[in-house]
Image (cartoon, rainbow, N blue to C red; front, top):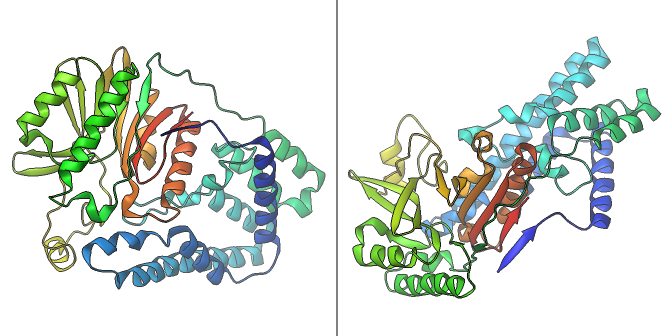
Length: 387
């Protein structure tokens, strides 16, 4: 049910670190086609993105999307190489500093349609190194300038090991982070929704029997506009006198649709609407043709609406940041003050694929970087706590 994500085995960390060092050394010091390298990096990193189109009867778009994404990164890497070559002719040191700057900082600004899951830090998360920018700067300087610096490069790598995050204490709450495994092709079927609701109440009652303080269910665990079902709300409000319930559901307000988190505690409910939507999944990130694209590809569906800011809510004496799926990988969310994040996801859209693992590694990057503890309840993948 619950996986505590406290880091991989130290032996595996050493192996991952060796692969990391070798890979970047070969990348920077051996000849290769940067266009082709970028193409296959983009393809293998993001091949899963098109999988959600299976559920719109648009499976033919999967290879098209995969190739377009791969070409984007192919062109990006090709441009990096061309700029590097141009600068190298004038000053080789300046050219190498350019490479270090790109790989340590540059990809933070490569955010097509606000999507920024391509981060070198992800490759460091299971190594013996940290994920801060100073670590990346020391690491890439040591690798790029290895031939010039020799043994000094080893000193730089050793220095990078000194930058470790501060430990964050768990809240004094016994929290049950639930996992569910509802296939996406059943998730919204009218005759299957009662099954999901029964399973949700089974999870909640099971958590009560285990004397938990809080139970967390995934995104859209209740696949309906929960605020329009007073009987369901009353049942959850009654149970909230025994346990705090955090669950995902839809929210209908002022003729608008929201993807939301419902927090039931002591007979009251707080509804937190999603602030950052998934591009092309929950809204069309274009200044024109939104309705036409929704009509053509998504069955005339409407875009979701958003809240004006990230939601923060309180359980007992602790403040938690609300994160719904994609939001859990948005860096600005982690800059908020509360040390605890409750994230809800439905990863069944992309299973089987590497998407849940990539999402997990991105969450680990930001949790480490900003000193957060993340409770992540997932449909279609194991739930976990990131410290």
